[in-house]
Amino acid sequence: MGSVTDRGAVYLAGTYRSVGRGSLRATSYQIVIIISSFTAAIATALTVGELGGKVRDKDDLVRARIATVSDSTSVQYLINARLDFCAEADLQGALKALARGAVDVVVYDAPILRF
Image (cartoon, rainbow, N blue to C red; front, top):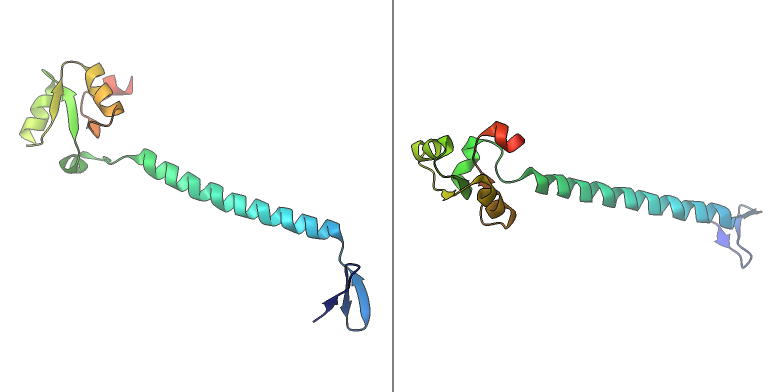
């Protein structure tokens, strides 16, 4: 092992080797970049997981709070599937319930929801 002198040189096996401030600065920047990359990866994973939502397919509807539009084919589907739901007067009302967190999912006609 070497010992550091007061001038920033390291004594190794009978010779002095200079430890430049530039190399130390570069190393510290590399460490900051590595830590930032890990932090970004973790934040991305958490965000993607959050965006995924609770409902991925029809089997997940059993555990979800559901809203739909009254007098739609979706109402009949939910009744036949024996799922609890709240019926809103229109699609805007169902989407507002979703936005404020009153429900987890809106079941309605797929082409209209995609639009």
